Length: 391
Image: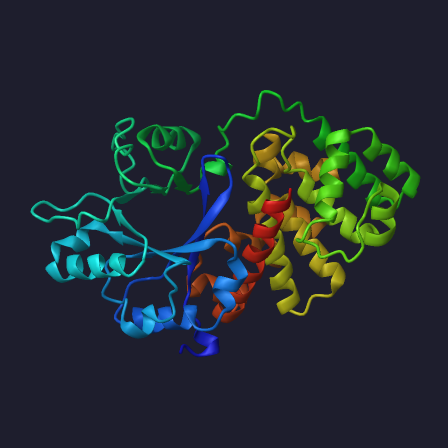
């Protein structure tokens, strides 16, 4: 077991299907002789798999060598899939071990092309591909249709690449494509709900009367629907069912109402439209910055500002506007605006961490221990999964 202060770093990425629904989380640990020990530290106890339920995790590995008996004892085959680089098949031992793992119930994706002279076990028919490593490689349309899926495309860095992967027969996708600035907004999205939400946030900021808030909400049926659905969802564990806007304002309080309105900026604008993948991403950033603020001793107001920073950090992609203009329009506090526009200050340092997979040097510079980072990841993904499933 790794010591608490030296908890292994784990890169986590959401995996979505073509309907913009999260279906799993990808996990990567740096290779090394101690990989088996670090895997035991990550999967020991129920924290990880409990936090990400009902999603499963896909564990990316160069080969199966680290999957020792003690490690496999911690990896339930019904919750953990294995994404193994196809280059590992150059070793006869790896081929046999993968076949045995598949036989006992593990789902296995072969990542990349099978090396020349090697042969994949016939049962391994789910494919994965690193689109970042093979950025210029063409993807023949429909090439994977004859194989059993779901097939995984990871490192998908844009809307165009997503379309190529989907046409080639991939079913699951991971990468930066949801935040591609060239991704076109929906043709039926006129932005009216978002403008009304921004108006509501302004009213909350100046402590307007509850009647003014209700009047704004009642003018927008889609916003009203999403608000009541969200506040009654499992994501927020409200003990009393909320059936009216005045009740929502009274029972929830303005602080929580403000948070949920911030999230609803990312909600789908049409009831029959696809979910917006920016929503769980913004929720994850918001929850993680809040957790880091709490870990650092921040009071309730500081945690609220951290949450706001995370949830607003993707508004430039959502609204197709410069972040500086958005910060000015919303009259954001200076430390929040500085973090969003220039990644300045403590909030900016934490936000920068959530935008990448930080190494120990980056964490140390931001004043975050590896153990605190791991805890904030689990908290944030647990909350983002709940939000994504209820909005």
